Length: 280
Image 1 (tube, helix red, strand yellow):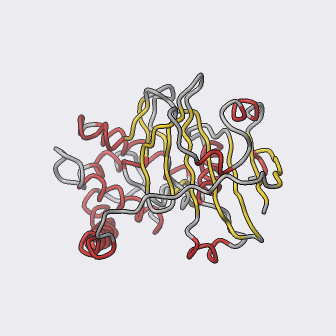
Image 2 (cartoon, one colour):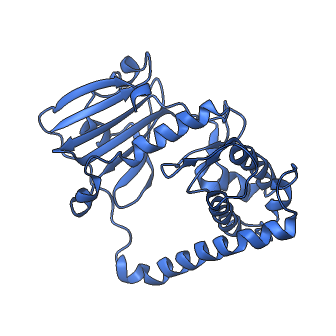
Image 3 (tube, helix red, strand yellow):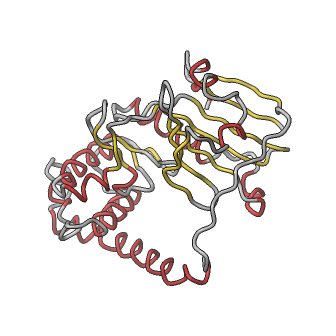
């Protein structure tokens, strides 16, 4: 069993003030750790202290480990995507460290650590209070797309607003891809727009979920609104169909509600390698 940590310059001591370089230690519960969200395998946790941190961890379910052999974790992919997006001039959260624990090449657990911005919040939460924020998000998304960034999970909940950075920035993007810069209407862009439309449909008191396309298409280079909406609609409908199917089957799949993720047990310290973030 071994671990690899990829750490930003001068960040190792910042991390070790909170916990040792041990993936399992970063998954454990504590009085200073507030769980923000969970799914079957992962959790996002706010660590409070002299410096607040956002810690996202994942403990691979045993039945899914075969799929992880020699493949980068979602946490590592997201850190790669954020760093590459930053080189395109896109505002992104700072990554302090990423780690993976493996056994014979199979991923057991992973973690990514960022500073926690007290003033930042999910764009979805902010837009429920102020629907006009969606127009600001649309402009930001157009800029990301024209720079060549494709989010891959492009919902308002996967964008941050407010805080020190000011402008919207992407999060939750391990499925991100990159293409040549420009206003081309490729499939990955349309998929992002379909997901964003579905995210707008879930906001209240937001009205027509396609309205954001007017702001998105203000800059030249894309088809007019009606043509753009026609191109996005099949991708939006596919998202909504899948969402409806998940909701329909949820009682059967999760009769007692979604199971909580189980952190790795703390045992003997594994062999640890430390590398720079540039080697992600």
